[in-house]
Image (cartoon, rainbow, N blue to C red; front, side, top):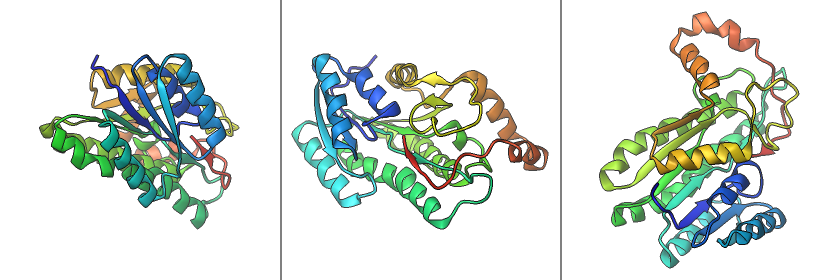
Length: 260
């Protein structure tokens, strides 16, 4: 596994982002943890320090394009970034009715613009160095659009396609790009769901899988296999054959968007 020293993780104050921070915390690692909650970020940074990693917190909203660019470039000038994990995301669904305009736009602003604001400032510099790695956190919901959460599905599909295409472009310049498509992970984002979530796994287990496969430079890191496979197969079929099935899936709660 390639050793990475300077790592940026967005959405690091809880859930999968916090678990990734803990997973990468080791002697010699320099972690830059981005999030909106300074108190929770500090708690995660302290846990990382217990494993002899250096952790610095950055209380910035990923939707703030200017602030993200300024801070990321400042970090990169000080110590070139080896790995950036664009993890910050929010989720909400229809609640059994429809999504309102504000909810849709907020989801796209965080899940799509937030990813672009995280990786775009660094691409030019990684290409110039001919090294670096970009990990984009998508979702199995980005494999096939789900009527229960249209904006979330579409936002995750958007960054999945972008990352997979970007991999082919940047790989020629020594920069690795990986797209992560997890299933249900036990985080604050899934705890609001009031329906069964098959094959749920802990955030720590998910982080371990992601770290291992990023180290091996897997193009698409989709898991668990037992959930990814049927979703992928259904996505290959005509919507005329599968619409009835997806339309009957439980509705995700609406309005109250929850950080990943």
